[in-house]
Length: 430
Image (tube, rainbow, N blue to C red; front, side, top):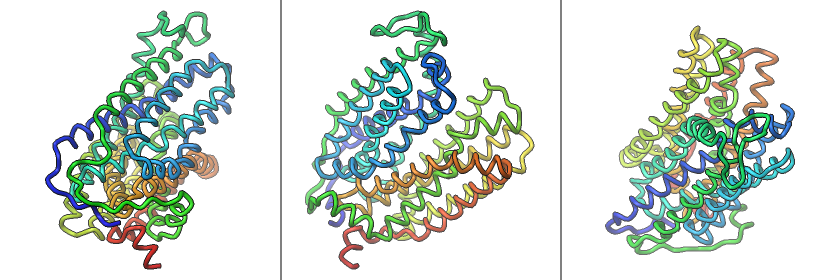
């Protein structure tokens, strides 16, 4: 269950890394585009504000719940097969969103989208572990995760542009003619779905599960129940889940409450809010690139114990400090700058968390990363509910103090992570 014995790495790994980057990018475009189209969808389907909110949040529930189950399938049946099926699945479901006729059908496709995307990052983490040497895992992981961040950042602009292009046109029977909104959002979903099928085909052609430079690795297939039991008994996994949960309570403000904050506190116009939000998210991409370099350097210099936990713990302290700055600014762009730096620090931790899961997961990398992602997305689901209630009762300043405290707790847990022992070794020792 130790690390694979690796000879000279194959150049093919860069092609696999590239196509996995594209898959992550497209996954986030399909995930985020609905928030851009939420207003015309609400108008055309006659949804209430409450129904729109439930529709937007439903994705995170199934996405969190199915992280470990689908990640375990990737460990058992191969990352290539499971990730390709995930891409096909979320692409079909995205296309089906163009055919919904009411709240129930829209809710169903959002729940199914969460299921279909749940295994993507756990399977991708397994691919990175197979193809990258331990000292490269941070950089390879940062490239894949960067694809998702770029996808999220460009999705609003791409979706608005595509919707404008499709006005008055008919795509597979979908058009905006005669609709209250006048926006061809159905055509956008159909187009994105078709593009996703093409991405799946390219992924299947390029990717293989077992690279030629893996000489020997003991593969042990366990039942799903035994894998869950092993994760639940691991101190590292509970610390990992806590880090992800606390981090996402704070980070999710960027994609949930930031527009409301800018509108209520600084009276920013709607047209500028999207620009400000994208600036903060693009700033985070810098952290994603740097994070891979940082964690690989720290691993080589300080070893598996502090080389993984140190970058996570220190970066999350930076996040906490940024949230403490926000209540003291007097200009919206200063607030966006502080939150952009917060996003940079969060994304700086992502390659380290991926590499940590690859270090301790052994042959169960998908399940290990899925465990952390599950708790992280539960934190993201809780964030807007908790912070909205705090804002209503105590104001925006207190809401950002809560974010700072959440990041602080995540930092303390991050310093306690220890990737020098795999999950299996923890179980044997216990």
